[in-house]
Image 1 (tube, rainbow, N blue to C red):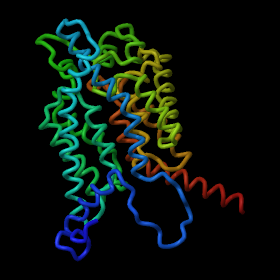
Image 2: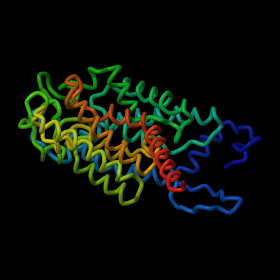
Image 3: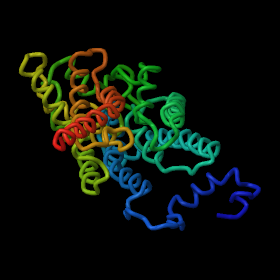
Image 4: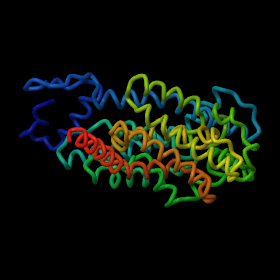
Length: 363
């Protein structure tokens, strides 16, 4: 770093910003002054990059699906590249707003605190456009991102200190502040003509039963919904990357699935719904949330036993909300935010139980 940006230099107050750009693609040349006990090539930058790569299949498919749904809405013959570029042009402004607003606040906060700018928001900013309707007004998104980053992250101390997932806080802010822009049949398809209904599979199933939706369409993703949440297949590819690189916990993913299947199966056996329990795994934002947001290492449970409880709780609550709250067909957003809230308590109980068992063995 240039000396004028170092301590004592004229532009030292900009050192956080300059350091962020210098280390964006380069590893800092600093080394440990004393012997280290743990040596590992995985750091925050590598974790964020791998996590971001894992979401690319869902993002690319989502862009194509935005164009595909538009073609269906206007009665045009779908064409792969024209649909993809149409979706790209619709989704790109969401990314520009997400990163512009979020990174501005991140840089400003780092400068005020005199700390380094961390890479955590690169993943958050990439996810936010994937979990909102493509028709979300940009000014609404800007306000929601600002709220989530300031009150959901920076007030707690920045990256690694937040207790709730910032991307989900963005969606929650939009849902409760501007519900008409986040629900209904009109918000999911870009450029839809007047009178066109683009109901999501969750809404269709709630209104007309399980026979009104196709499992294969939901698995492949050729249905309406948030940009990156429709294709369980693309999300599954991302899950394989995360598990193979050991960046995300497979225990949280699996336990979320088990929780959803358990509650969904009991509800089906009890005659509360005709929706097969496995449908919940490919409907709405369940798959995306279980793979990319429930596994957030900052806001998830940290103990190995706690991960099973945390994931099962999320899957179960998601299906419970879907079954018993007709005003909100989805449920994954609230389930994960509740899971984030109780994650420290879950870890505390798991650790306390472990200590108690150890004490009894010693006695």
